[in-house]
Image 1 (cartoon, rainbow, N blue to C red):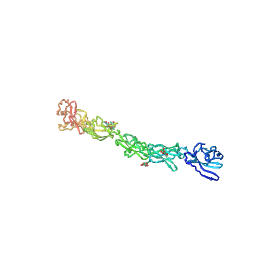
Image 2 (tube, rainbow, N blue to C red):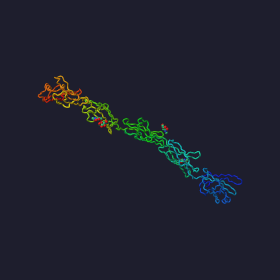
Image 3 (tube, rainbow, N blue to C red):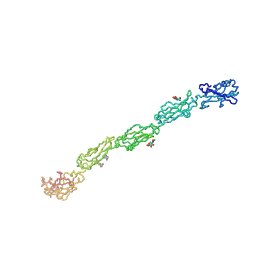
Image 4 (tube, rainbow, N blue to C red):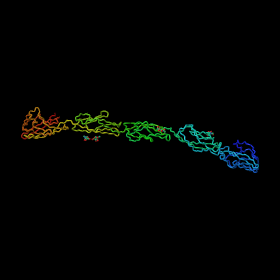
Length: 591
Ligand SMILES: *[C@@H]1O[C@H](CO)[C@@H](O)[C@H](O)[C@H]1NC(C)=O
Ligand SMILES: *[C@@H]1O[C@H](CO)[C@@H](O)[C@H](O)[C@H]1NC(C)=O
Ligand SMILES: *[C@@H]1O[C@H](CO)[C@@H](O)[C@H](O)[C@H]1NC(C)=O
Ligand SMILES: *[C@@H]1O[C@H](CO)[C@@H](O)[C@H](O)[C@H]1NC(C)=O
């Protein structure tokens, strides 16, 4: 290629100078030729005939030759035509590396006479190399807190070509976060710089890839790319957040220990330790501390003490979720304790009168009791009762107080002891019932007179009996108890008005105080009949009707001096038959 090549107008001028070199001539005109690298072997470079000023025939005769400075045969001279031809394919990058221009110096030599011509072969660059990034996969870690405007320097791409064929420009694909700027490096050349336009948010996009392209200036241009993998590093810019601002839960008060009350859960968008959450209570009351525990990792809240609706009906628990960077989010839990009918009614007997005298008047308060049920609502409402058929009833008095009141008079002789079962049940589900037994004893009052076993006794006594004869036994019983039932037998002593104390019954008979045995004090005879008559008995004829009547001469059969019943008696002496009759009669009157 001759220097007429438009692309190299600067080397058109020819420098001419003559040097005298001891007898041979060096024509100081330097021929300049140009060839593009990689041109095919045998390509025409120039015709030297004209420049040398000799004919084609002379070339061979004068031993024309081409000699490069490094003696390498890049060109050859066709002696037949005077054409300089490319003898081997040239690689500009191998010959000159980055030196530009790339010039191979050579001489055209004519031996006879010796003559030198200086020449230069410009090897021009073609765009035969592609820009290349040494690192085709670039990892770029950027913290999400990085301020926009921050620049990240990238390595430049290499292109073995020079000049316009070298790297001219860098681009990145269109993206939201970065633009690219080319910067001049100290070594001449440029390097690309990524400039952050907009801050990164790892929680939105934790990683993305950019394509960095290096473009050379060839025609057509060649490009080389590298992938930039941008990894956004987390900063603790997110607070843990609970699913709910308030949790509400209801649990029965009889829930067992370790019962799972609720599981809270919070999330933190940050990564790694910044997103690691641990749960805890905050500002907890003593009751909360005593009753609940939270698992720091699972967020499960368990019971560690029993609940009691009657003591605490609801708890407010503050929970917090803290991440590894000490940012925390809060929530609260309202725990409502549901009442369970877990308390049976309680009965307290505040007073009890026992024994009670049988003559107590009705309406008497026998016992006072107070009822209590720790549950609330229906679970705490109570009804109380005692057995039917008792001479008592329960009467509400004041608040939870009830009185056990006597309904009918009592009679110890009929029943001296009442086992009273007080039953209180609540209205809850299930019904809980409490029983309490009290025993009421009835104490005796001497309200019963002794009663003889017979309304009258007829004792037959032989006339003229011997004194001291056991003539019979009377017997009485008393339904009262104790001393009230102790019986002593006696005969009424002579009374005022008795006409003849000698004839009082007490002078005729004696009675054993304890056994009721009657004895004759003396021999009984018809004198008594006379007495009978004297006292106004109707008829004594033959004394067949024993009607002797001794008013005021009574047998006293009395109980311990408190009550006594008197009995009239009749004595008949059976004349002739040898028997006398003694009659005791039913009382005529109570004292
Ligand atoms: C580099 O390329 C960009 C985009 O193609 C273009 O806008 C810019 O002008 C170019 N810079 C140079 C120095 O060629
Ligand atoms: C978080 O707080 C605790 C106690 O206040 C402290 O000991 C710990 O070093 C803190 N951790 C960080 C990551 O700030
Ligand atoms: C009352 O209870 C006592 C003891 O529980 C028992 O011995 C007695 O027989 C009971 N009496 C009546 C009348 O139920
Ligand atoms: C109360 O007495 C009844 C009947 O005698 C008995 O069945 C019950 O077990 C007693 N209750 C208590 C609490 O003693």
